[in-house]
Image (cartoon, rainbow, N blue to C red; front, side, top):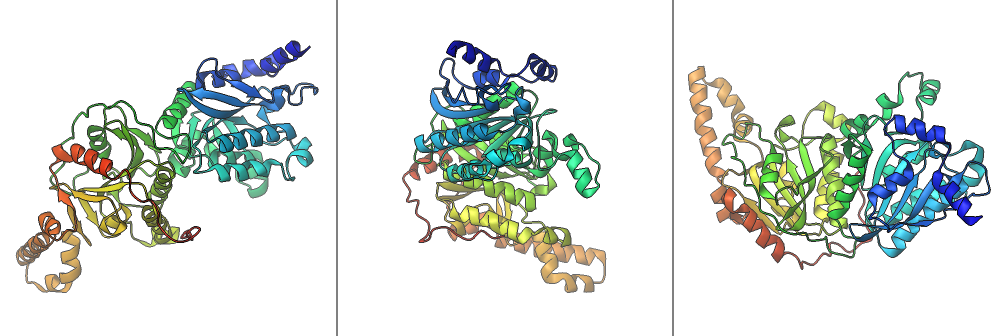
Length: 500
């Protein structure tokens, strides 16, 4: 009898649902688990949940433990062949239990999500109680920053269920199938009158490029699962452990840095040339692209990279890029990954539009995260760091373990042209002709450039050193090694008050 029940559970839902998923390029939940974990290591919990009910094998969710690249993990996987992966009371209990196990044992938690949300017919059993659906999110929040939490999203994550991905460190979404939304398109039309579609409102492209809730836009389910595996490879199993070291690899070498600060420069090429070859793992590559974030390795050791990218919006910091940096810095700090800031920033965006969006409070969140981060952090001024942009990129006032400048670096309240216009606007306007104005501006600009000369700033100990680009990698390797044992206490308090 047991073996017969086991086979029935392992088969999932009716064949027609398997066929419908296959037609959309979707794998069976158990196939997803097999792709994620090391062969032969999965141990399932709660396989016989709701087994006496008709058509509810495992109550629509697979949970258990396994290893990924030899390291223990806990996981859950919605089975969309069972009532569209919807939640019943035992579904919820299984999810809560496996997150609790991950937290209690100090191992990463992986969510393979494909769910239509709660079963309305079972709402009294699954929704309001102490071990109801809300307990899932409470448990995720408690585990946040204690253990890595990663989500691969293969189909819908609807209504309250959308918060499972939202509380994860990262979300990999499969293009064309994955979606997140609080209300369906029918509900939106009923409540607001807006006519939309699930894809237009909450599809993978929307969340990875516009809302920022998604982190990786993947073409296939296999790519999404591999993305989760790669993400975990940069992080320890929990907050008490050091980040894992891999075999060192040589760097390909830095590209030429444009002499003019006004010339757009793709900082991603700079990052890839600086770190171990093939190690750069960009996060949220499609969202707030004026700021590049991601993991990499230098001499085999993980670092988190925060870099301004002047190829997009001139590298100016906006509301979204401030939020992007804030969360990534907090992620690295939680899991003991040192931070490398590569500054090429004109500052924060100004104007009525961004002020109404709250650029001040979003910028304050970024600066708060930089201040509170106690992992080793190094600021490299590649070309420019103007105004509050210097602060947001872990400048000297924010206790970096080093501030390094390249010979191309400039540090100032603002650029020379803006400064000359700010100070001498009336005088320039009073000059008799264009030639006189141009000569005056050139003279004052030269004075300003001499005042902020990088070697002068080095002589005043504003920066700790000036290095040639070719020497930067070795300099970073030695300085990060020297900062390994730093004191990570920050302040006498329980926690700060987030600028909101």
